[in-house]
Picture 1 (cartoon, rainbow, N blue to C red):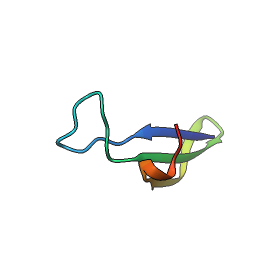
Picture 2: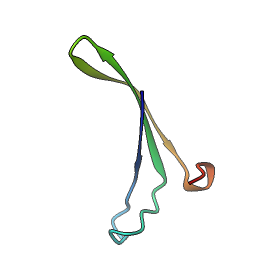
Picture 3: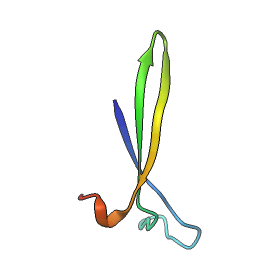
Amino acid sequence: MTARMSLWRDADGNCCPTGGQALADLRLDGDRLTLIRLRRVSIEDFPG
């Protein structure tokens, strides 16, 4: 599984994150959700 989230900087308004996106690769291990990898992607590199 992959989760995508926006990243806000201190000066950003609630409507407009400018810190890019974070992508978290997740795996289900029994009854636990495990974070496998977390990476930051620039806004310019991630469409939509």
